[in-house]
Image 1: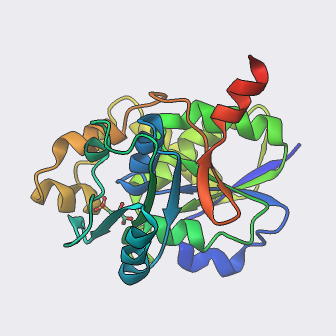
Image 2: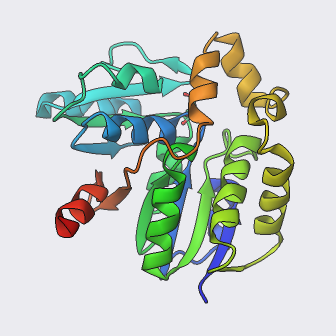
Length: 243
Ligand code: 3SL
């Protein structure tokens, strides 16, 4: 049986072997939730980058550019990091280059893995089903906040562990702790997260509806996977093969 393990921060990645593994990169509030929403609303591919300047450069190649720092849309970019900004047909058929404080960093720091999948509660079952088929050991890489632990990404790791518990072994206590936290939180995640640092940060920016949206389970079946230098939605390929 393959295993599932959880890395609570990209700063801890040096403790893990990524080769031979599938990484699920997660930044529930809000980067990976927003990427999933962008694919669900027709984005063709997403280029996650670490630096603002690099991201800005993609405008010359005809990409939409998106940037967030400390929860706020960075000046001079087409889009910020709210999932609702990607829903009015504006990203359909477009490539989006995006940089965020933590989420895009977690993705790019995982490049040594055999596969990188973008996870969110919004596409939880699509990711779980893909991992059951892939049969690789899994490492959930939580984006955290500036190198530190956060609750919402840990809850996602617990939710994924719950979905996979019959088909995967738990590699260590990080997976168990995530699962126990998820059990404690899952019936009312909005309340459970009320005291958490990033929810408080976002509430100060008055984006409560983003928080509620990002905590919804199984809204979309998109499956963003890293291919060469960008993320693409491979659920489209799977659907083509099945039809
Ligand atoms: O840190 C990140 O990558 C962002 O998702 C943070 S925020 O939700 O846009 O504040």
